[in-house]
Image 1 (cartoon, rainbow, N blue to C red):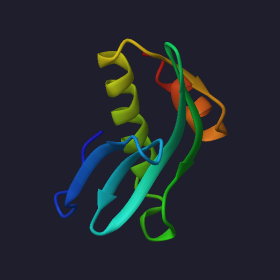
Image 2 (tube, helix red, strand yellow):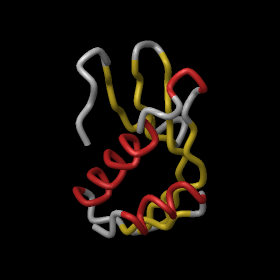
Image 3 (cartoon, rainbow, N blue to C red):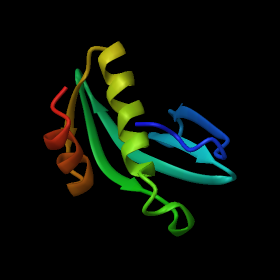
Length: 91
């Protein structure tokens, strides 16, 4: 997915809050998770109203998937958006 040039983005795994965070222009979108052994359970994906409709939730999930692959974790989506994303992008 191509990011519009006007976004200033930072992505991090906030382990204290158990969520992946994507900060864009001062707004934080995130995916809450629980790690259970070799599983990364995604419980909720949230995008602030100001960023909705711009593909930001997909950007968050792209980063979650990339991190899970690096750590050799399987993703268990409890969130309906995460489930739909993974069905559409069966990595």
